[in-house]
Length: 200
Image 1 (cartoon, rainbow, N blue to C red):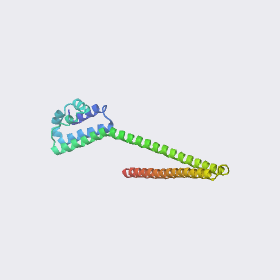
Image 2: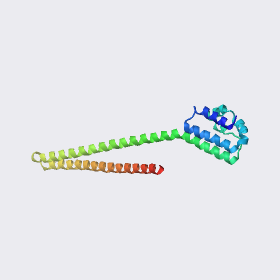
Image 3: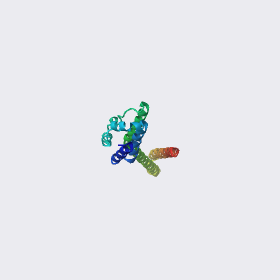
Image 4: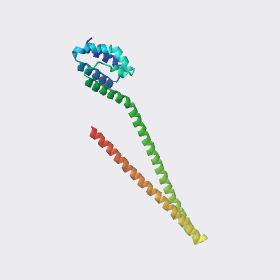
């Protein structure tokens, strides 16, 4: 069996077990290994690797170290090739974890945003309610001026103004925080877009 026949059969057997990018990386590794060894060592390498079926079995069972147990074709080249393959394998294994983390962080961000939105709506509603209650109390105080005296009027007017002031503070705080949140979100989106353009 020649190198071309070996690699062709290896590709055929791996094509049903790997995605296309993984297959191309794996074939690139073993093709480069044959190139480093040279034509005079093809038969020796094929014996060391075993049949394509055996090599595929070792790869798919996850015994990567055993699959990489090849004769030295220059220890530096072998180490660099093995290191590159390990990098590819780690990247493939880390991809699902990275995707899960990204989804989790996105969900957490959305949840925190919804909580902040609900808090802002609640605080705004409380502020409007306080202002309305204060206005009613002030009106009631002036209405009680004739029947209940100045003390009752001052009590209601003072309480109404205090309540309305609290409502105004709540509304002002909500407006300030919402504005700050919108500016922060806009800045974050701008940075993300700039990074995307820089990578492109």
